[in-house]
Every structure is written in structure tokens, then in C-alpha cells.
Image 1 (spheres, helix red, strand yellow):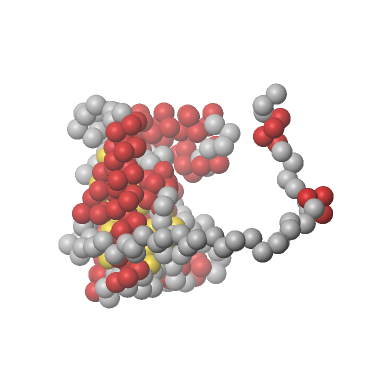
Image 2 (cartoon, one colour; image 1 turned 90 degrees about the vertical axis):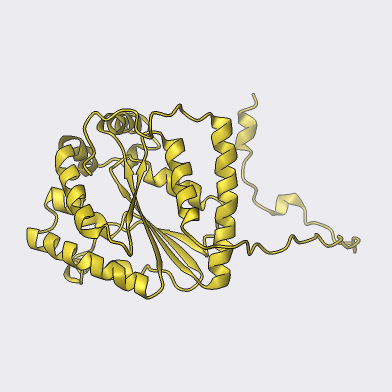
Length: 277
């Protein structure tokens, strides 16, 4: 299961999708995600989707496309910061359980409890004993979630070392995306094989029948987004519970209301007008 260095042509060597075809299919799948949302809300289902993988593997951009048209009251993203001093003394899974969905909710974990099997394991942020305990407890924890009725889906985004480095370089050169990289992230380049070994060990213990891992080849981001969303939809027994289309009521005739003078209100300056000159 290791991700080989220098791997090329991930995704089966297919030609890159054209933007127009990609956008058409993405919109179709997003329409289905709205149907899924209404089914979750109407049926009281609880859905958890875990997004894991290498740094710069495309998790965040895929999550953005999944949630683009969803109701944030139904579907929410959980991306937890570093644990506090108090949280470090809790049962490891405790800080994650409070974010699990109630009936009619979807939770997308942008990284999850699997931090312990990856970055914490490789960077020495946990002890070997804590890591072994996680590998023992995680399958039990996930079986409990599934047994309680939670729909749990886990996706691992796989990217080659060459493409990861290219994306790192683009982020470093882009002032609005530079925040996505930290010193720890950059060490994933020099510790590539250590992360591979940690991931392989994690899969051995946590790729269980009740909650299997699904690998998304993500050197081609467009293809990865479509593949992941299509697969998620295919694993859920949702039906179309979209409410009927509403009709706009006729606007009533005016009754004499007059708007207050504009100079009584504070308006945002027309910055866009400066761009026209």
C-alpha cells in the first residue's frame, strides 16, 4: 500500500479532463449531493466523511466542492486545531466525539483522529505507546460509531512526491495560499518514506470491514474530486426528497412607502468604480 516515490500517471494514465466537461459533471454531482442532503435531513441519518492523505493531496479543494451548495446548518466541516493542554490529558478520541453529527446532519472531517497515526507518529508528537494504543482502539471506536447507526466513510487522498512538491512550490509563491504550508508540512518532503510506512501500518489496523478505507488518486485534482464525490454517492441509499419547486407570490401594489433620503445612511464606497478608469 506504500505510495512510491516518483510515481507518475496516477489515475490510470487518462488524459486530463477538459474544464467544460469537468464543470458539467461536477455540477451534476453537486446536484445529487443536494438530494443527499435532503435525504439525510428527512430521514434523520447521520453521516461522517473522513478526509485524510498527504499534505497538498487535494483534500481541502474537494471538501470545498462537496459543500459548495449544501446548507451549512446540515453539512459542516470540522478542522480542529492543535489540542490544548487540557485536551492532551483527555481520552484521545474525546475531542472528536463532540463534533459527531446528530440526526439529520453531515460532518466532514478535514483531517481527523487519524492525526495520531500520521503526523503525530512521524513527528514524535505522541509516544510509541500512545501510537500503539490508538491502533488498538481506533477499530473499536469506529465499530461503535457504525453499530450506533452512523454512516462512516473514509477517504485517503494519494499524491506522488513529484506532484506534492510542485503544489508546495505553487503555494509558497502564492500570497493567498501560503498560509496552507507550515514548517511541519514541509517536512513531509524529507520524511516521505516515514509517512508511507506510517500510512501502511495505519491501513493494516484500521481498514476494517465495517469502515474500510477508500483511496483517491489525486495527482489530477479534477478527476479526484469527481471520483470521490461519485463514489460517496454510490455508497449511500439516498432518495430524492428535494422539496417541490415553490412559486413566487404576486407582489402587492404599492401603498405609499417612501425610502428615507440616501444621505441619512452610511454607504460602502464604490471601490469597483476605480477599476473602470
